[in-house]
Length: 366
Image (cartoon, rainbow, N blue to C red; front, side, top):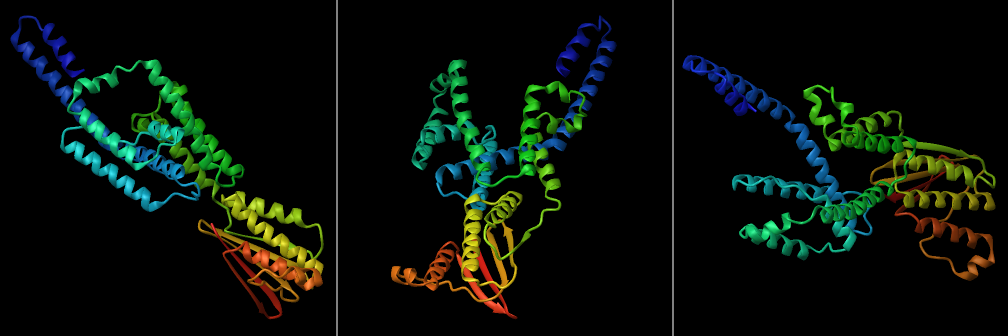
C-alpha cells in the first residue's frame, strides 16, 4: 500500500524536483507511522491470537487422547503439557531456520480417527517423508497441484469425524440446561463469524482479533458463560428419604439432577444411585432404620462421595459373596448379599456408628 502510494505521488509530481522530494518524504513518513501503528496493534493482539492457537492445540491433543484410549475419562494434563512444549520447540526451530510456524492439523487427526491409523510409526514415517520432500521441491509441488474438489472432499470427510469426536467428548459427561446453553451459544457465536461477517463489521480495531476469529470468539463465549453459570452450584447435595417403599424415583431424580449440575460421568453417578437404592430396599425390608434416611452426595473432578446417615441398626457389608444356602436360609443371608453388592460397586466403603447414628461412606473414583 505504501509503495503504491509513493509511486502515485512521484508520477504526479511534475518536473519540480523539490516538490517530488517533499511528497516523497511525506509519503515515506506517513507510511512509517502506519507501519509502526500496525506493528503496535499486532503486538497488542498477539496474546489473543496465541490463546486461540493454544485452545486449538489443546482440543487437538484431547481428541488424540480420546481416539487412542477406549477408557478415556478426562484429559491428561501431563500429555497436554508435553504436546504444547513439543509444538513450541518445533516452531522455535523452524523460526531459527527461516521457516513458518507449526500447528497441529485437526483434519489429519480426523483422518486418523476415520481410518484407525494412529500408530506412532505412521507419524514418524510420514514426518520423514515430508522432511525429504523439503529437499525435492518439484515432487512436493505435486501436492499443491491437487484439484480443489479432491481437497474439499477430503476436508469434509475428515471434518465429519472431528465433529463426531468432539460431540462424543462433550457427551462423556452429564449435561443440564446450563451446559447446553454454554455449548450451544459458543457454537452459534463461532459459526456467526464465518456465516455473517458483516455482523461484526463495526467492531473496533482493538477487538477485531476476537470477533474476527471464530475460534477465539467461541472460546471466549464458552469461558465467560461457563463462569457465570457456575455461580450458585453447590459441591454437596442432600436428600431426605422416609423409610418406605417406592422412593426409587426420588433417588433417581436426585442423582440425575446432581450429575447434570456437576457435569459428572453418567456411569459413576448410576453406580452410586444403584448402591443407595439397594441399601434403601434392604433397610426397609429388614427394618434397619428407625427414622428418616439422609443421603448426602459430594463431588469434585476426581471423586464422588456419598454418605448415608440413619438411626437404627448397622448393616453388614461382607468382603466375600455369601453362599447360595445362606442366601436362601434367612433374611440375614439376603441382607449380606445386598451389602456385598454395595461394597463391590464402590472403590472404598466405610461403616461406623456415632452417637447412635449409623454412617455409611461410599467413595467412587471419577
